[in-house]
Image (cartoon, rainbow, N blue to C red):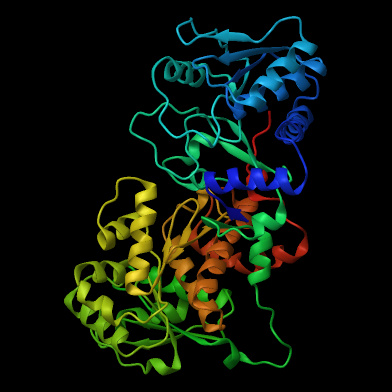
Length: 516
């Protein structure tokens, strides 16, 4: 699913009007009926106070049209217009006139000096003040209104965008932004819904297909691509019947140190569970027995170092390498890591302490093979890139780093983002229970296994991230979020792949939808 900019969506609106021979008010009516139907499905005619706050642009026009349908269906609706400017859109005015036909009262005009209407905790607020056309922060009386709505404890539904939130830009400190419980967004989700600093403003969200011209949308270069179950299903490479283990690669997991051998166990186990033909763990001498006891399917090679890696002996032509979980930062480890990457030409997966070594020894980046996959959490990413101003700046810095070093970055988080140059792939699987020690080690092994199975590096990263999150989702049905451990996530890799083919999955944003 494509994520588009506000400009692209505005152009898509215009193309749709032209290609489908529609007027703008006809398109707005289509949108309002679709949104009303979604709300009506949930409320079912319940008698509950509904306050609709409308701006004077097209988002406000949507709000007026939705309010009109709600009034026609017997809902208890009050409509307020933030009448702070003389610049009203044509479609706002059209719907402002229409609503008079279904109510005895005109909508209440708030001239932005009036007292803010009382909003109670039992109310439903529909926020249709500003949409994707907003280009500056909300200020003054309007900011006070946003604050009042947010603190009211009413259930807040935003139309297309929470007012004050930009589609693909960061917001200024202390900006006034509606904090919605649920957002009905039009045609395509917005980038800021998936970023840590801004995603909470949208709450749960649902994408409503408003019928924008599909051919025009198809031709647009996306700001980012959302990886849904349907997308993951198309990436998956089924196995052929007459194959053997050698066809599915040999992963070498270079991991572990005294007290952290679990990291090597988790990465190695995940690589086996994700389908690598063979897996060998390259570990300090003290860790060999631990690996052999913990997972019998994994072979081991003992390093010359007793408690930490101190050298590197394998011929990497025989392996697909992943390196970093639990290795530490000792001088011998740095030397071993440098030796490993200098003799490797095919893409490798680099995680954890190996990323910290790269941050401390930036000269080693020139030896990292092209299309290698780096999987940092934010702390590791800051050591590589330096600090960033906000989530948008973080993505720009990651994109620049990716292009400079010809690598793929997997930015781990609630919605993990895979970065290859200017291309962003946003993951929509996973849950908060996966915020647990060792979860990243499992991801490292999964991605390495897919590279070994001859997935292109970008697809290995994107698919690996999706399956990692999906394994956590499937496991959480049994173990709950609190009961997830990294080893449990690893054991559900197979069921996560099976789930792609058992049934059509609903869009993840609908899975996370709140009931109201």
